[in-house]
Image (cartoon, rainbow, N blue to C red; front, top):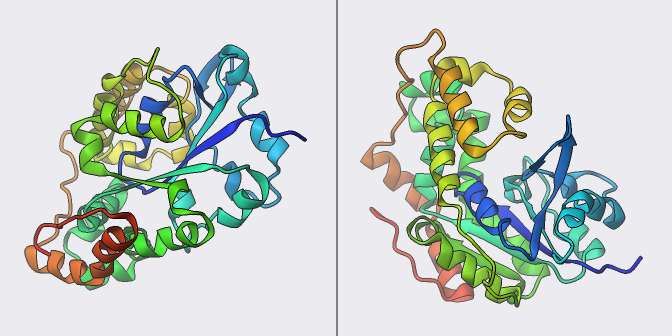
Length: 296
């Protein structure tokens, strides 16, 4: 079949504001995200993970965007985003699959201080915070969640498949700090890569605030034991502000104190930085990006 759409895919990294960037980009009139219908209410669906599925087909991939294109007929760019696309070895890289099925896709990868990302990742699951609180760094790294958090923070490991299979211009790297400080500038840069103007684009900064609220209240135990699939079902079809209110309400039922975060000590941070030392070399030599992580 003729592939008539262009493809923009945010491939990670987890805990680097991929959701924020997705909801900023999907407001552009030329861009659509996948949509699903549930009780006649349509909602943007960020984590399709379609390209992780064995036997994924181009026609099947485009079909998940059909209703969105029907609602926005002048759009011609599909937007997909999933941190699962850069979470080896838990998930296999999608490079070969994409290369075989999509015509010249544009990838976006968000990176942040790798140790900050690791710390955020091990605190993401509220139910694990208590067990990590008195654990040593070695014990955390021995846990499957901690081990995967370290591997995901190793951007060289996660980026290399994309770096090898696609020319440099097809992989845009975004600094998390730039996204936090000026998401509009990041959106403008990506639009330039896609050869589309910012005409008709309006920012949605409130989405970022709502997302932060949701992250903050996720530290409460009751919310931590709600299955992820149920949370997605409850929150996927409602507005960002209502989602934040719902999550906040759930977090307060039967609980009065949040679970404290497992913060890394200075010595633990230095140990982790030593494991990620090659990242700065890759960013500088291959992408002309200079970074200096604190304490490194």
